[in-house]
Amino acid sequence: MGINSLPRPTPGATNNRRPMGTPILLPASLLGLVSRTRPSTTDNTLTEPDMPSVNSNSYVHGNTHAPPPPPQASQHFGYGAPPGYAFRYSQCTGRRKALLIGINYFGQRGQLRGCINDVKNMSGYLVANFNYKREDMVILTDDQQNPMSQPTKQNILRAMHWLVKDARSDDALFFHYSGKSARPSPSRPR
Image 1 (cartoon, helix red, strand yellow):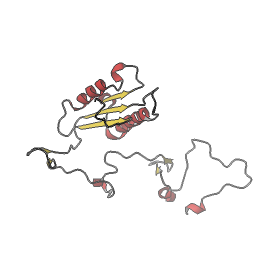
Image 2 (image 1 turned 90 degrees about the vertical axis):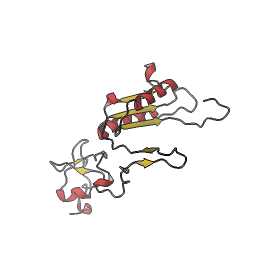
Image 3 (image 1 turned 30 degrees about the vertical axis):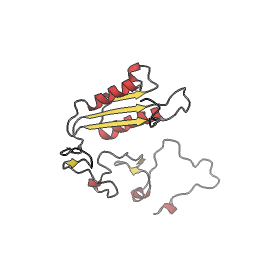
Image 4 (image 1 turned 180 degrees about the vertical axis):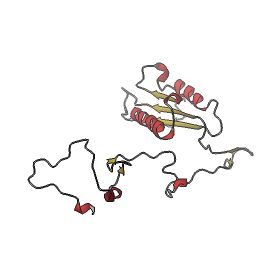
């Protein structure tokens, strides 16, 4: 049975639509042919695809189109670095901390609309797919009532200090910014 042999609506029938929320039942032979969905493990209904997780879309799990993992050996900085400076990529097996900043610039010329949504989406994505905890995140957005949660220069610098404070080898520190950017001009102080 192929896609072209699926039942078609009967001409002249009064209601050939499936009620909203009703699962689509397909024979097991067709489940592999339907794109952007995956079969449920129990009853051959279709469910939404899973978002990629830490390992599901990785090079080491057979996805040859994904980038290879970073090297585990010590790496040296490039030209101009002092001799002996080296670093090692994190294996992300330690603590997880995240700083997420979203600035919509409410009431200003050039106001943005999606930056706070970016932060909310990123927060949910980190929790659902990379085992971050909400209590290990600092979120600064310009819709907050609490002055400590506003993305001011002082609060951003304080939050960056929190992010790296007590960092150890193999911790996973995540920084996300959504908003405008500008290069300081020589005539404008920083």
